[in-house]
Image 1 (cartoon, rainbow, N blue to C red):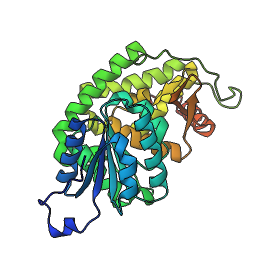
Image 2: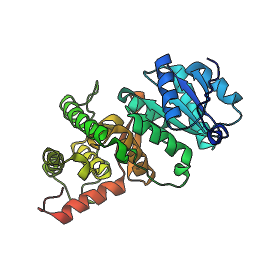
Image 3: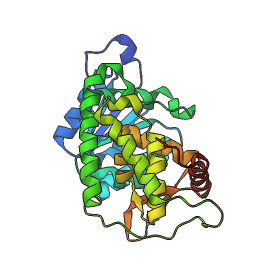
Image 4: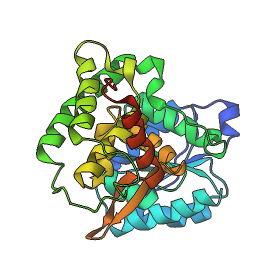
Length: 307
């Protein structure tokens, strides 16, 4: 595909570095272009995945690269993700990857450690905000920005939360799409910290989810704590937790959950473990320090209801 230009932008936008778009289908490319234009940015080029690497090499400058995915595109996708991850780490440009929920585990495996904005099943507000965050330099400041807090998308977020709760229930009942829970050895010596009964953690998680029956879920959104609880429960049960399952446990849109997951990993609270049987998936678990802290916290609270 040839470079794409628009005359709809002001002179200030025309003077800014463009956004290069790559996608795995014509529909994906059109969707990405609409997002970039809605964000008030300038589209520099629109190319298929297999032509993106060469186009990036020719691009004199770019404010960002937007990769739009609809499915697992195999080698072309993985090669491009690897190149973009290296370039972003080197500070050449920013990047956004938008994809469906089915690709969460794969994408986090490939670019989970890079400062790339991931948008999973994102609505228009999340997509535009992700581009703004990517190009704002926020990753260089170490700050966390919650795209889901956009006030203009209040109703859309409420609908997204409802879908997330339904998906969470179904996922827990089925133990995840196509995945069988795997037993693991507990990383914490039980003699070092007070024991925590699995029923206690389950009761806390259930109590937190029950609040959504009586109040808007976003009143109590606390993805960091929800993920800590879920990983503690999994550790006690000696189960591994894939990224997709942890995003569901966070009870917020997947895009927001992934941003928190990265932050918690960067802070040393979460640890990524490669799946020895599937190189395209990683598991997440509590770090030893986080595990001890959680167990001691429950020991300190005693019989008091922790929600």
